[in-house]
Amino acid sequence: MLKYEHIAKQLNAFIHQSNFKPGDKLPNVTQLKERYQVSKSTIIKALGLLEQDGLIYQAQGSGIYVRNIADANRINVFKTNGFSKSLGEHRMTSKVLVFKEMATPPKSVQDELQLNADDTVYYLERLRFVDDDVLCIEYSYYHKEIVKYLNDDIAKGSIFDYLESNMKLRIGFSDIFFNVDKLTSSEASLLQLSTGEPCLRYHQTFYTMTGKPFDSSDIVFHYRHAQFYIPSKK
Image (cartoon, rainbow, N blue to C red; front, side):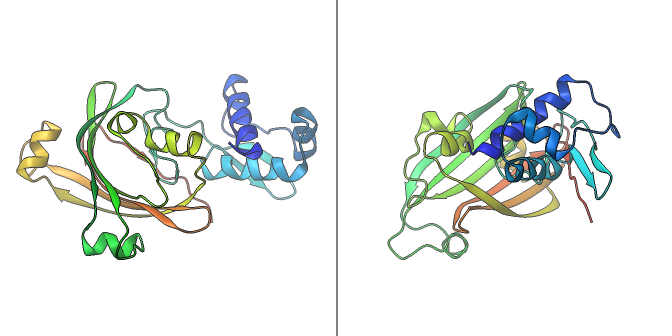
């Protein structure tokens, strides 16, 4: 974890523990710099993360204000480190359905992950649960040159926590595409719903800080158990 990410985590805790309400003014950059004994640039970067999360907003010439205390039941679509972070107050578990190395992924995945002819991927299918309720089905391809090691046990937990903590992979940004659709019979069986019931299909490509794509994922969300939050600014 980089210094500014650590400070952002501390600021997040400070806001929640101090019972700030939306619209409350926070200490300014200089005061925060002194409070946490870090540089001005570190504070500015940390505030940028909180702004991206929709927790604060900065009014030029006026100050820093609490925007919204995140709903722990909703997935922040704009977070690039997996939705386990958005649902951190809940118990997240995974059931691995398929895990294997694949030498010839679909052409669309080869193009998306910018694979060379001899590059291999890890392919993973899993069911994600939140507090014992099935949340989604996840189909993922990981570029093995970047994600150098995965196994079944790692896949049962948060893969992104593992990538950041153990492999020191710096996750940069993601592209997201989603559409409303109807469940196939196999999907309905896994989600404990009926064929033809609605779902949200969610395609996401994750990139490293240097812009290299490493994960292509398709997610099918349970329409009753998945709720979303999209913070935005002009």
